[in-house]
Amino acid sequence: MDLVGGCRAFVNVSELGSFTRGSAAAGIAQPVASRRIAALEQHLGERLFDRSTRRAHLTPFGRDMLPWARRMVRLADAMDHAAQRARQRPLRMAVPAFCTTRDLAELDAEARACELVLEFRPAEPGERLDLLHTHDVRAALTAVPPDEAHWTVTLGLGSAVNLRPGAVHLETLRIGRTGGTPRRRVWIQPEDDLPHIRDRLTRLRDSLGLRPSQVAVADSLTSAVGEVLGSADLLLCSAAQAEEFGLQWRSLAEIRLTRGFTIAADVGDDAERLRTLLWPGIARCLGGDPNQ
Image (cartoon, rainbow, N blue to C red):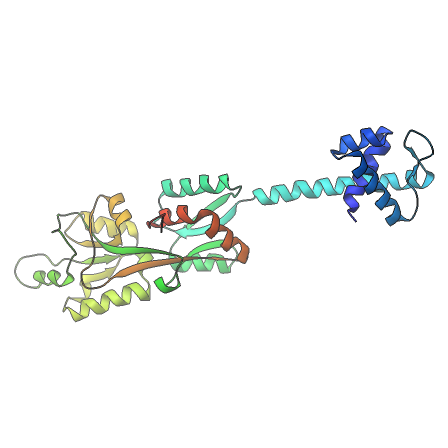
């Protein structure tokens, strides 16, 4: 039986002295209130009301049970209030450090429209996993190989100097080996310092005969962008990042490099809920196609 519903009907009817007024106060139809009280009486094993009169008079047993019923209703209301506050508690989520404030703000607005409050913790790939394992966050956008990903983002090269139309051939960077032309470098930002991206690019570097220093991992995204803005160096990045930094962007000719992301969470339902409700917004934050 619905013990709380029965106690609520019992309390309202006893306080107002009428099944009709009591059921209205409880927001239910009078027959429903009568059935709930009857079920409560059956559960407790004795009558709560003397039904021989027009008014709802409590029996001695009913008077003894009324304080307990009030306590039950108060506890149920307190639990509902606590549950509402718990639902509104921010869900802390680790996100890539390159996500822009504007994109995260839009994602937050979309989440609030779904009655979900997010709190973002920007971090690099390894730190995002650590934050999840130490329970500092409830969910994390983790970097994974493309074949394990829910979201993918194509990488190319960004440049502050003019690039020729079409894809960039890394073999053209060998020009700097002789003469006075400066040796150009490709900078890998920390987000892409992962085997399925970094190792493929360094193997290509070696196969083309480039110097080891011509493909380097930057200490931070800021330092990588600074190197590119002040030289003819190239930044491995997404098209969205290139636009953000005012760089020209071209794809790589020799290989296709792709970021992959999925959501990991302490509770599996959290990951599924985020994927289902916020798929386009997360794709936009990552620099991918929201319609993907």
